[in-house]
Amino acid sequence: MPIHSYHDYLLFLKQSSRPTLFRKIMLASFLCFLIVLGISSALLYSTFRQNSAKSQSQYLDVTLGGFTSTKQSLDELLTVFKVAGAKVEAIDSTKEATPSAFAFFASVDDIVKTLSKIGLARENIAFQRSLLAEKSPPQEYSNLVRSLGDYT
Image (cartoon, rainbow, N blue to C red):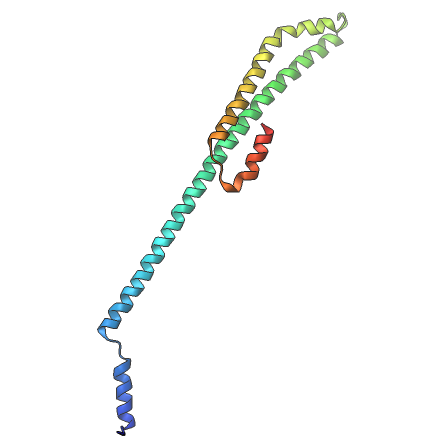
């Protein structure tokens, strides 16, 4: 068994621990691969996230627009009924008023307008339902879809 000096042993360790050119190239290429993989996965995730957020935003815009339009139609219809009720009360409260049948005939002229507003509100609700049926809702909004379906 050959005996080597401690100095020879340290020289051997120094030479074997020194990275070779091949090891340096392999390490650099592996690090570059990890960096490219990380960047591409981050870009893919952000693109997927943006598409998901964009579809959610579009669905909420359609839903909010439909809800607002339907609410506005129903508010207009309610206003028409309030005006008709106010006319009846005003005619009933005057001293010259005959029985309340006169007040009924005073608001008969508004019946055509009221019926047309009811028809428009019905059409608006049906249209908004069809718009919601065309859009496929995101999974996160399944409860919202059920409650909107119940509302309209």
